[in-house]
Image (cartoon, rainbow, N blue to C red; front, side, top):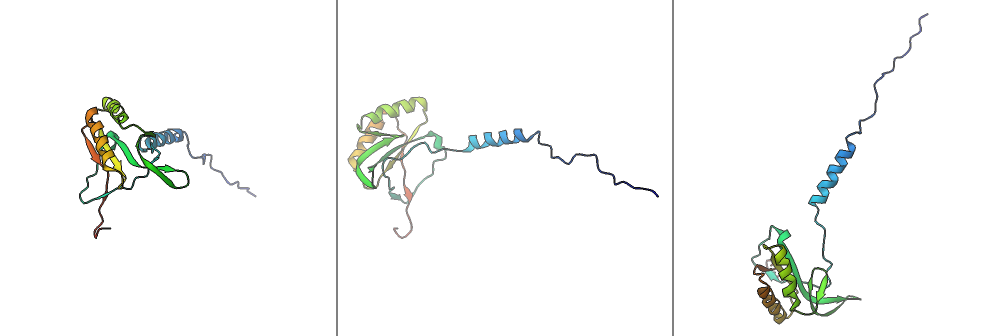
Length: 152
């Protein structure tokens, strides 16, 4: 009697993983380059005013923000109107000039965007504009939200 043995395949069934570290590294680099991290923790409350015509800035890397609004206090309370640049509260308006001048030296195409609470004092905004003019930062805009049809 003949005895037959089942032949097994000699080929390996493993998936080649030698390129896996390269793929993971490329994905890591891709996400590091394309992800924008939030850089500023807001210490003031800003409710934007509404405007009919708004324009979106495409190159946000050139924008430096100045926040003006009531300071957030503990317990959901609001304090006096303060100026925030980056992560720090500015007590003296004249400090805006030096900070923005330094930023303008680093990036000559700098755009300063004022994010002002809708109930902030206009006098403080005017003082900030004067300091920006003295610093030579003449590209200034205001951040607003689109006015809803029907006034809402």
